[in-house]
Length: 262
Image (cartoon, rainbow, N blue to C red; front, side):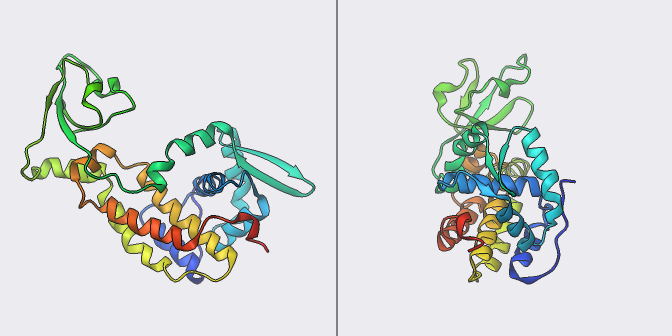
């Protein structure tokens, strides 16, 4: 089972409950957030004891860890080893490469002032957006038009290219953009984050809060469309939420899985 229930206990569990209101926490995804955060901080692996302690502190069911880890191993995300009776888990090389590839988007500052272009593609071009290189992000606004952010030089030469009008977006376009940019979800996360500002004073509690905050943010920012963000501009909810998240992560400090059970 991927979705895990949460018990109502203590401040850490309260944060977990708040984060689960929009979308239930999934244990396998939280493990990826945890192992990825630790890997980027120079900790190659995390013991099963630490993962179990974090899961229990959050209020999830530790019994579900075996199933979650099995899924991650099967899907090529996690490698494990044993040392005596203790298991140790780490991201695979391919998983670490994926985590590093999006690290700037997850941990970096908001990207502001990115130009956005309105493009139109020929009517006889099926799946036109699939032709775009990775250097471009796009959000379709109709069957023949999309808003694109990135280098204009990377657009096909036979596409129509125009700068959007400076006036406000029509309501139907704004609806497309706010949904693609996860505006409602970022605003909801911003309302939840203040509950994490009174930090626990124990290593396990701090570790659990860091992973919860990071996971709540990570699952949104990797779903949000960068082109929609660029079209919405500086006042978007993502930029404000990012400021809150980065401030909290800075206040908590780097993940110290090796000190959780000290």
